[in-house]
Amino acid sequence: MNDHLLGAHVDLTTRRTLKWPTLFCEHFLRPQLTRKLITSSIACFLAEPHAGPSNPSPKVVMSAQEAPQPPPGEQPLSCRSLVLTGYGGYDKVQLQVKPIGRPRLKPDEVLVRVKACGLNFAELMGRQGLYEPLPAPPVTLGMEGAGIIEAVGEEVRDRKVGERVIAMSRSGMWQQLVVVSASRAFPMPEGMSFEEGAALPINYLTAYLMLFHMANLTPGKSVLVHMAAGGVGIAATQLCRTVPDVTVFGTASASKHDVIAQVGVTHPIDYRTRDYVEEIHKISPKGVDIVLDPLGGADTQKGFNLLKPLGSLVVFGAANCVTGQKRSLLALAKTWYKQLSINALKLMETNKAVCGFHLSYLDDRHIDAGMASLLQLYAEGKIKPRIDSCFHFEEVTDAMRRMHERQNIGKVILLPEPKKQNDETTVKK
Image (tube, rainbow, N blue to C red; front, top):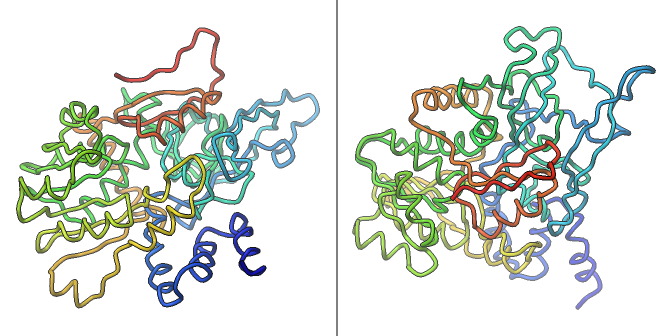
């Protein structure tokens, strides 16, 4: 192998996510394929929020060097956080406990003591260096949580100390204390637990906006939900139930079929032992109206072929890229190579739509309206996050392994408070 090629290969781990696949394609694949593969790679980083004008990152108060030091005589605060120290396996996410001073808030910010955090597939990708919006390590992970406001900025009028809120951001939520914009702290409905609050925003916003704003779900339509037992899968299925006469095809391992059927999946399909395309055609020869695709690669092409005329394929992830605890270049190359490539004329001829969804690029108007609708649906009893399991920060490896190995049915939650001697990990049966 040429020296410059070897150097490029070794340097892959230090390059930004959308650059190192480019190098991989340029050096190891046929040059004429590079443009197609890199163009299609955008589908691998969808559905999770990152910082921007509408979704600013929170202040990270996990570092004693970066955080304000307490004035003389003031009792320092102790902050527990989960920090990504580098790219790789489960051991790269470490619990850190450091004394900090009370953060100084900007006029429009609030300080939240986090009681529960949500684990998303993006954190698994981020740990492997596959989630481009995540800042380089060391960085505190986490995009959603729920807790209690401990302080408000001088210009904040619609939030108050002691209020229970759901908070969102690109990163920094996996810690006991977090500072966010007041606009990204949503009051929790009465009766909602902190665990449910932490489970709601990312998964349910993603499912809600895809189904109702992109795919135009209406009565009588049919929907294919991949990974139907996961956080977005459960959310999408519950939201489909709010519309009359919607047929839901859901892929999941056989052991999860009873649960997803109870949630609302009309036709559970065991993707491990059955060809889901064939199974759907047995029931609905013309296919389905909507496909929600978090997989990428060859499954995106299958999803497009399954669509009825006037159907919509919404791509929002690339779970096929993550095959092991650490990053696999072979899996990435395979996913990119098999990604759907199509032109506008083909779309016209087939009367089909292909959409890409990324929560982070939406402005405040969409986020606020979506959260308002979801919280109203929760208050009406029409949706309810299913909590699969709760792990303390000390058990983050077990939490990530549970999601990585597809054992969860619903949301995996992380709890910032220290684990007591008699505490047991809660796993919903």
